[in-house]
Amino acid sequence: MATIHSTAIVEAGAELAEGVQVGPYAIIGPGVRVGRGTQIGSHSILEGKTEIGADCRIGSHVVIGAPPQDVKYHGEETRVEIGDGTIIREFASVHRASVGGEGVTRVGARCFLMAYTHVAHDCQLGEQVILVNAAALGGHVVLERFVIVSGMTAVHPFARLGECAYIGGCSAVRQDVLPYVKVSGNPAKPFGLNLVGLRRNGFPSETIHALQHAYRVVFSQELNTSQALAQLEQEASPIPEVQRFRAFIRQSSRGVSK
Image (cartoon, rainbow, N blue to C red; front, side, top):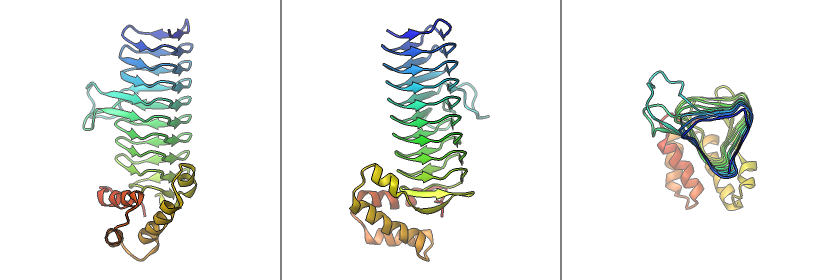
């Protein structure tokens, strides 16, 4: 059974799985479901239609499932989903979705949201994403798996950050960021492949070498984006990560950071 501090408020209709721990003065609303073994820190607020996975760690003063900060929202029923094993530290916030998207703000499994981070309405975070202190995501932002957003960084609404991208501290991300690429600055500009992230996440040497070539085609030659994409498609690399790299360029609606 769940362990609930005497000062916490768990409203009727909330569902707490076995082994859940709820700290002092936490408030859990009637539409919330919390998975097995999750710990909820003191003074945290979980509200709305929110589902927290198993073995998560929710710090103190965290807010999950609050209404979106969107003038188009008028009380529609939308959701938040937090994946298994995710850590959300003190004073972080994850808002439920607004209208015009899938109806859900989603944080994947084994993510790490550090103190004071913000995930706005309709964001979609893949697995093992890291947001460093005070990083903020605008609405409808997509972060694919293994992305790291460093501290004090702001990401523009509707931007996409590709798999294993790395964003330097105090950056302003206004356009999409290609998979496996490091960017930094205001506006954020590329400064190489995320070699540390690629190696840490087990990408083989053959893949890394192929991505280095693709990076040079896009960023190191005197080609515009359309010309670089045409060259990559002509080369037709069979490596899946290179295929993802060029598909990301083709599908970008905001343009990629260059």
